[in-house]
Length: 506
Image (cartoon, rainbow, N blue to C red; front, side, top):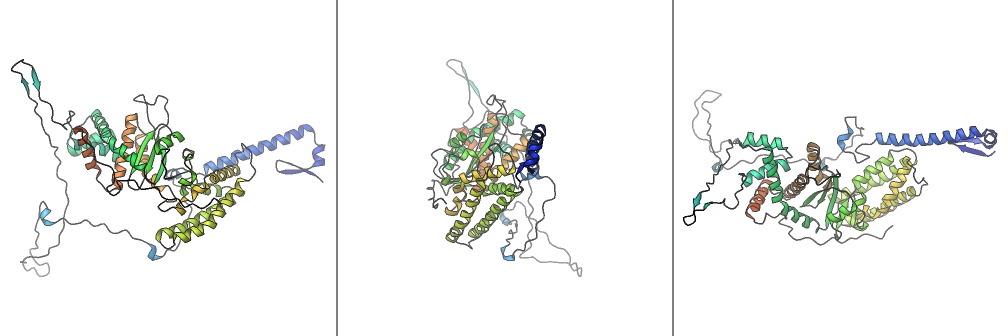
């Protein structure tokens, strides 16, 4: 007997034909409503179950819910590395400001009076901060009349002396507190008054910030040129609101903080766009190196063989697929097993227990299986506008196939990392700054943020003092001289791009 399927239920054709037309229409409508509501329920449940492990949400959004416990894993003792103990180094005696000789007077055992000298006494040093008194330098500008015409002429300030009455180191400290340590105007005011005994107005802090931003502008331009000439760079972006106090954002567009990261230099920029054209402008259409990023579409213009897609982002996508039900769960679990196997091998390559040649041979089979799983999932039939969890899985696999070659660049190219963690770590201070300040209120404020992040992040990567560099930059700007170089001393010239050794597409 033939059967007709309505809403997942099979009805004998004879009973269906015997049913009135109104009942047929009602059943069809109810079946369609059940299907739509089921899809909506699945989408809502997936949204509610999102966390930092299966989506782009930050870990701070996970809350205090109990995390799933894992079975304890036994680790070998030899693989555990302890951090060396940090001990303060003693200063030479001749460099101490004060030396106190402390000698015991009597023996605590018998009470006999003690005499003599200890040639090697135990040394204990105490570090203290003296009361800070600002240096006040007065320039007396004399005004003298001319004996011939009687006109009076007042002397001018010497070169490098600011008319604002603030020295370059004071300006650098304000820039350091506002930029590197992310203090608000009011906090900078209070600290300058409490610690240094210097009173600054709210507007004075703002003017010093603007002066420092302009002083380090040439250094930031130098960093931009350097980064875009390197063979490898990491790129990422995060939201950074920008107000319209100066009229440069009348449409209230969303601001985005972009970062380009290399081992010794990082460059930041706040732009009112997250488009592909912005990425082309920042990275440069002529850039011929390798870009490590996530799967965001703004990087789609880069040739796929010159990209490395972040596996940390990919792992979250695969986890989201595995946490769905039905066919999606099997697909996600299969892909996750291959991802975990890949990184077990990669860790052995990093610690030297597995050669890169052997690693490439092992990855060839794993890559073929990974791609075959994606292709199988991508061929599953779905509707054009279907929004079920299975449809999301299929579309994710279809998008992964488009950048499949970019998943394996790190396997065949030395010095390329499989993740984009370098850019993620570089953005972390900026995210904290955004949370405490809610972004910037003007274009000048965004420039100060991006320039200070560029200078401080690059100097820290090179183990160079930030305050001294800011002081030198401020002094050079006031004297009309060249600012200090932000280029690393060991790599003044860009290196040639690495040779890509990618195999033929599978």
